[in-house]
Length: 345
Image (cartoon, rainbow, N blue to C red; front, side, top):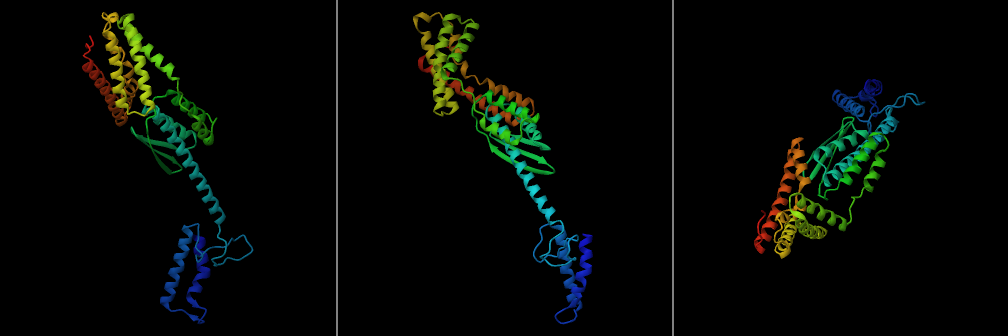
C-alpha cells in the first residue's frame, strides 16, 4: 500500500491539480473530487489482484519502463496473483474430490449395515489421510452431511441414504481401503478407483436357503425339540426363506415381506404338526421356523449407536427393527387364527 501511495503522490497529485486542456489550475472543488476519486482507485487496486482497465496500477520496477499510471501497464505481482489463483482453484478442486470420497465412504458403510460410530470414524480417517485438516459429519437414518476443513476453508456435502441390505464384505473392503490410504499406499485417485470396484458379495440363493434352514433346525434341536421337530423346522424355514428371497427380488416392502414370510413359515410348520407322524412333536418347531425373521443385526446396531452417542440413528434403527418384529408377529397370528393351530407351548 505504501508503494501505491508513493506513486500516487508523484504522478497523480499534479495531474489532479492542473488541467492540461485549459492550461490552468483546477478549482478547489474539482481538485478535491479528482484526488478522492483517484485515491479510491488506488486503494481498491491494492485490495484486489484483478484490476480494472481504468484502475491505477504499477509498472514492474525491474523493467526498462519508468513507473507510470497507464491502465495497460503490467501490475507488479500479477503473475504471482494468477499463480495463487490457479493454486487456490487446484486446492479447492482437490478438497472437493476428497470430500466426495469421504462421503462416499460413509455412504457405503451406512447403506450396508455398519454402526454409526464406525461410519464417522472411517470417513474422518480417510479425509485426514488424504490431506484434510479435519472431517466432521452428521449421520441420520436416511442422510449424511459431511464437512471437510483444510487451510481454514470448509466444504460441505450431503447425500441421501438408502438401505441396500446388510453386507459385511463391503464394510471390510472399505476398511481395507482406508487403512491403505493411511499408510500412503493409495492416493485420492486410487481410492476413487477402489471404491468404484467394490461389489457386494452375494452368496448363491440355494446356499443361503439351505444354511438358514439348517440353523433354524439346529436351534429347535438344542431347545429339546427332538429330531422330528428339527425336521419340521428345516422344511418350514427353508421354504419360508425361499419365499422371503423371492419377495425381496420383486422389491416387496420389508414389513409386508416379513409378514408374508412369517405367515408361510407358521402355516407350513403348524400343518405338518397335525400329521399323525408328528402328533407328539414339540411346538418348539413352530417357534424355531420363524427365527430367520429376527432382526438381530439392526437391534444390535441400534443399541450400539445409542450407547455411543448417536441417539437419533439408534432410535431410528430401533424403530425399524420393531416394525419388522411387529410385522412378523402379525403374520404368525394370522396363520394361527386362520388354520386354528395350537399355540407355542
